[in-house]
Length: 476
Image (cartoon, rainbow, N blue to C red):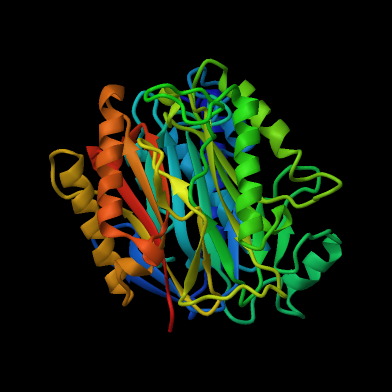
């Protein structure tokens, strides 16, 4: 009988520790479902088509979580990948998120939306991601399934990272840091945190530039932005001429636009609770690009003037680097308690954002959503047909429409649409984007137009060329 080599023993032992921790977390899930959410799911899918959230709910938005440092110890003898493969990293990330939820009084049954970014190496291991995901959701212990979107990206901050995951969860009544007398409320009170808004409670280490989670209070009206891209350094440039400056100049442009949008919406940087940044691989190294973005970020957040530390997800995608743009962001903000924002229906549009190809206004710069609205999180929808972008985008949009109808809504109720477009041949990317934006214009117009994010990515599940993800707000 041969003994396991020492490094193999450590690897197996490490996975056992992770599995045991995850099992304990899953047992913590309990037998009761969250009465504030309604799930529309199919037995054949590991995720839900749509998840409804009752008006006035309390949310928990996590940051983008990557592999635990523990995985580095487990796989330190692997030269090829020190943090484990996609499956192992996914298991680690979901186990960590389970613990993060437990810290604020939540469980996996309270998760309503999951976004996963899988690094291509050379292709994203969607199977490994899915295999680990199904050990946490849709199980005997936890039959709950959240809405989910999965896309393939270029890389993450560390070259060994393969997975980044972010959660949106909802607090059941009587649980969490906002309910006086609960263990979570008492623990948060002991943290003695400085908050810039009365609409949330922050988690994470005070020395970090971002929070690991923001727990919003009940009856909070929200602002969801469209994707913000750098403005041209040259007004009215000639066709095909793109000049946006270096990563620092582009980051400064993003925050300048962000400030103008927030002001128009009756908000400020102190009200922002989530930022998603996509840095594109270009002339500079990813590490240098991230550092330049963080330097601009620190001028607006986590400083003496504004100590606010939003939750944040940062990744690298193909993006619009072919147009010499190196970064884009989108963000969420919460209206203060004394806000006099009025909503004609469930939402109100703010400003405008330009199309990618022709730079003409295409969508609101952002959408304000009333706390009186029922939110609906829709899973990423991929086309069921082959063909060109027009055919595939139309098919994906029909799938998204069917999902919002499950919750009693229509496409007019969408407040945000994200279009992930497979990069493919760069010569055809502008054409693909133009065809998607033409369909957007044809489908949405006027006050009913949702905020929009269009982002080229490495690949889409199912080998299609577009995936559409959405969120809707429906008045009772």
